[in-house]
Length: 124
Image (cartoon, rainbow, N blue to C red; front, side):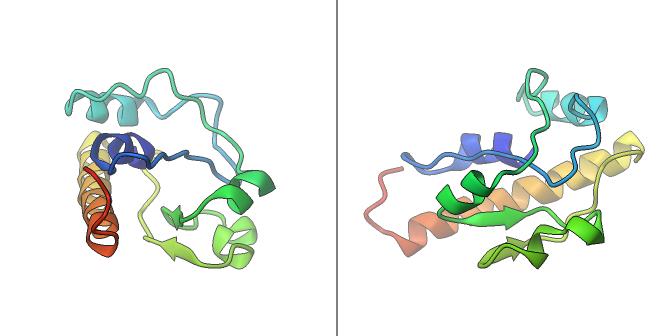
């Protein structure tokens, strides 16, 4: 969800990718797909990915949604990581997944706005 919102709100020239230390399945959570469709954003073709060392090394900014698995938490091995501490939507009812989506959207909108504020030469 965060990657999709970032693609919607990010300034020109910025890109995003989403990955995790232990993706829970081969497919995106169906409720996440459903609640994103409510915002006319289609994430149904996306696939969960495992984060790689190259992804970490090549990223200018790293944001973690939160640590679901404390043994492999990215905050343990990634420097300069922004951790939003967002609850995992897996296994939650649709109302909770909507609340998580809305929290992610608000954070991504603010993050994108901060990118512009911190670099006034960015052309939105």
